[in-house]
Length: 353
Figure 1 (tube, rainbow, N blue to C red):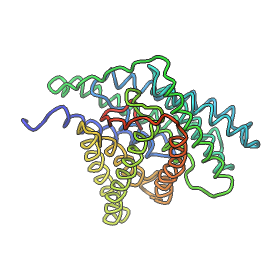
Figure 2: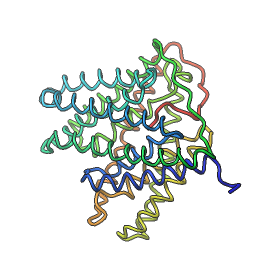
Figure 3: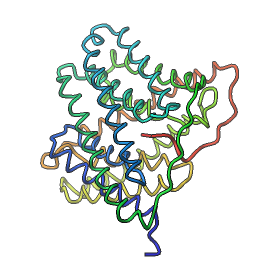
Figure 4: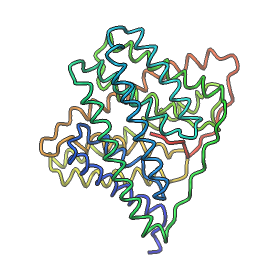
């Protein structure tokens, strides 16, 4: 018992939450089970009250972003300039809100869902728009409900002995550097959308998620361009996803389609990733991305008929998103006459993704 601490309990909670989210996603017939599993991972906090608030914000952002995309997408697809303007506007506003606003998590998922729906429709014109929005909501609900159940049970039992440290609230207010920073993400999204007109890029939605995720930096560490911080996050995302993919590939080779072995790999990967994330060091983001790769690859949409092609496409989309964002960051940084000093890394980062 001496080896058990709040960190150990947290790692146990997220493993249980991810497994329950996978179960719920299958029961709800969600299309992208790994997204439900990742929701089950990311929503979890050390106290049930914090988990509920975070889950409500994630659902609210997903629903509102999905509804806006449902209305706007048919008007945006035929005319690319309108699509580019809409993506840029929503990305800028939502990234700014995700960095500075009190309800940052809702702003983040409002923007993410809108961008995901629009770009998925660009990539798959024949896919029913309403069905895609519905499954995004189902996946988030499955992950959130799983998190709340596990968190509530833990708060009433284990957390009484091993309580978690409460997170500090964000400080709001007008922040011009944050707006400029958000605009860089918007430019990268427009570039991604433009490239998709000439190149058959896989998993456009996953590339867009990557762009917005790595741009999500703490406002206290944000300089004039955020160049150093974002590049560090890109590096950590690359390392985390690469390491997670390597471990997942090993389990795929051993499993040969066996669901129990895939589930064991999922449990081990989630526990390792959360352990890294809870290290309190600047490399914590590596752990989050490690888990992302594990879930994308080892959690198929159907264990009975496991098709791993979508998993590898989603992983490719992550790396494409980083490749599109990097030149935007570099040009913006070089064009800034007042280049900031190197920012110090921080272990904790907002809502994160």
